[in-house]
Every structure is written in structure tokens, then in C-alpha cells.
Amino acid sequence: MAAIGRRRVNNRPASARRTRSTTGETARETAEETPPGKEIFFVFLPLLLLLFSSSSSSSSCPRFLLLVEKTPPLSPRRKPLRSQSTRVSNGTINTDLSVSSGQASQLSQGTSVTVPPSYSKKFVVVGDGGCGKTCLLISYSQGYFPEKYVPTVFENYISHTIHKPSGKGVELALWDTAGQEEYDRLRPLSYPETDLLFVCFAIDCPVSLENVMDKWYPEVLHFCPTTPLILVGLKSDLRSNRTCIDFLKAQGLTPVTPQQGQTVAERMGATYVECSSKQMIGVDEVFELAVNTVIDIEESASKDSSRGKGGKKVKKRSCKIL
Image (cartoon, rainbow, N blue to C red; front, side, top):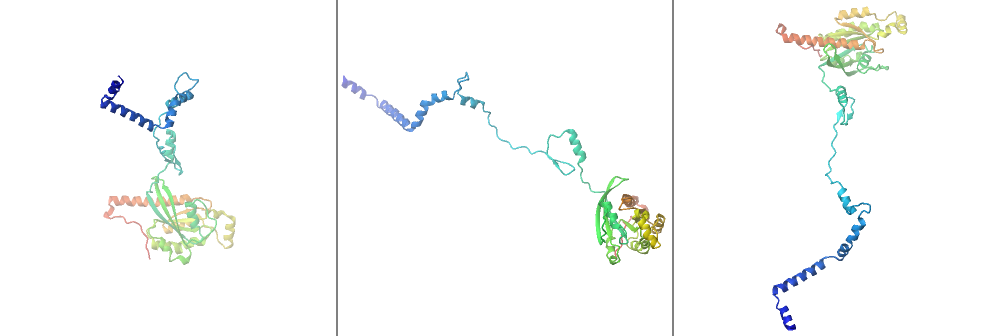
């Protein structure tokens, strides 16, 4: 019987024997591939689950699983939005996006856009040295009175104002000249393209008024025969100054009176005004008169040109160059 049993075992199909051998080989390979530490981990896995479980919670879910459930899902990080900048009129930048409607209206009202002037005019001042020409220009354009006298060679100042009748902007190029005789040949370089001339004298110096008719009026009449003139009496505050009066009285002179200035202006065909640059009396009025004069001339010339008066175009005023 034993022989028969052994024979039956040996008589099993070859495929069954191959299957058993294959299964054994797979088990051996799995045992060989599984590291020893991993088997220990699987043995102690239930203990680890009990260790991390919450004793106070009625739920049997481990704590690390609860933490995983409570952790919010990660979202892709976005770049911060660039705040919109708003330029204020004082030159600062406001980057606050939460601007109310009232603040927005204030910003829009305070913010100013630079607009090119409607007119651009050139004014030239002439007169004796030391009569106050430079002080007149600085007081008007820069707003302060220079106490120290420095003889001028050539200086230019740029100022902006408003033509009040039209409300349009005007850019003024103010040209200062030297009154000394050594600059007589250089001074005419300032005359081309002049829109208006200020012929100046000092009220505390009657000789400077005499030089208007002897020197300055003939000179500007030669180089700028059609340019409008304004005769300006400077230092009007010294007319009532006791020290000035006594000083002139010792020389047999008196300060220039308004009537004397008006008489000379009529002979020149000019308008006469007075001002005090030191006390800022009448300074703005001098330049307001000048601006109104040149713009009125330009507007009247443009109207005549548009109408075709006389069939001739009106030529622009110009000055001669030697």
C-alpha cells in the first residue's frame, strides 16, 4: 500500500508539480524581498494605532487621521495684486485702493495737469544802471527783494501769469539788460523778437529821467520802432523818504513827480506807471498792464488779418539788428 501511495503521489500530473514549485518559489522570493524591519512594523501597527488614538473622544478614529481630515486643502499661491497708484498735486503717491468718493473728488480737484500757455511773450527792460531794473524783475518773478546790488550784464527770467480778460495762461520771458556804457554794443542783442519794452528810471534820481529822452528812447526807437513802450518810474517809496529828500535838496534837486513822468511818457508815446519793488507796491499792476497791452495788440492784429483788411496781411512786430 505504501508503495502504491508513493506511486500515486509520484503519478501526479507534471503541471501540478510545476504549480507547487512555482508557488514555493514565489513565497521564497517574497520573503527575500520583504525587509526584516517591515515585518516588525506590521506586528506593532495595532499598538501604534491605539497609542495615537484620542482617549477623550468617543470616536475610534486615530488622531493623526483626524488631523489629516481637519487640515484645509492647499491652494496654489498667488502673487499679491499691485495697488493702484494715484498721484496727488503735491507730488506724493497715494497707493490706497480704498478711496472714498469724497476723497476721489478731492484728488481730482487737487491734481493739476500742466497745460502749455496760450501766449508766450518777451519783455525787455532798459534804463540807467542802478535804477532798479533787476529788483523789478526779481520781485515780480521770484517774490523777494534783493538787498545787495550786483551790476547786471544779461539775465533772463521766466514767469507765468494769467491774462485776466480771457483767463488764458501767459508765459513771460523777462530780459534784463545792463545800463552801463561799456555794454552799449552788446545790449542790442536782447532786442530781437521783443513784444514790449520797459523803459525805466528811478524817482529818486532825476538824472535817470533825463537820460530816458537823451539815450534810451532814441535807442529803442532805432532798434524796435514799432514795439510798444511802457515808461516805469521805480523806487516810488523814496519820493516821501526824508533822507532822500534831504540828499537831493543838498544838490538843488527834488524827487521826480508823477506829472514829470507823465509828460515824458506822452513825448515817447508810451504809457506811464510807477511802482516800488521793495514794498511790492504796483509791481503786479505793471506787468498786468504789459500783458494786456501785448495780447490786445495780437488779438486785434489777428482779427484784421482774418477780415483781410486792406487786402494785406499784418506783419509781426520786430526789432532791428545792427
